[in-house]
Length: 208
Image 1 (tube, rainbow, N blue to C red):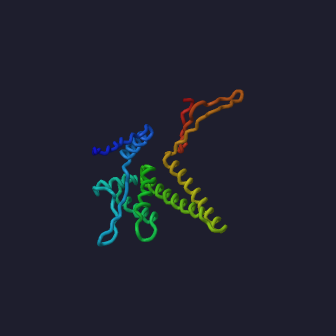
Image 2: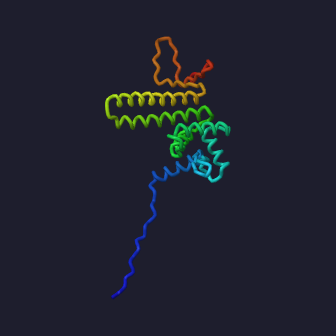
Image 3: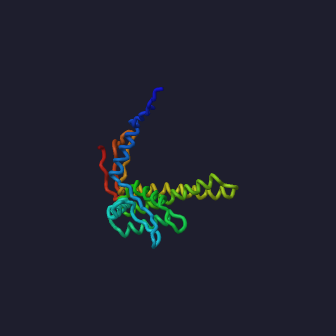
């Protein structure tokens, strides 16, 4: 009787598709430009403690400040405390929900403290919207449905208003009107091209 050694199947390494490779490249580029900013909650003898989720404390603090669009440690500490309170239920800090809010703010790429605060509010409104969306899907009677609908609609409108406010704040007062079609009466004049106006009332450049 001949002993046969069983053959071991060789598993080929997975080869990402071009689309998957592009997605990984975009992730690498984004994280290189905006490093993720996270917190980590730990329990010790003196109670729970929160610190940046980074192997080096100083680097983690600077990363958090960069994510919040500030160079002020006091602003970072204040906004982070507010974010943890808004994102957590009960007395314990929710690490996952706090990091979600931080990821939203970081994704907005705030340029200053005002944009960071608005980003935190937008994240809080979004979380509340999802809460009432869930309640709306599990209502037991008509009054509950109407209450959840009203709250959800108000929150959705608020979120849209916040987005518009952020856009206006970032626009620095400049408005550009592009003329797509012009009808001119006899003897009239037409402006063709882009017309720029500023909130300061200065004249724009015409006919470019």
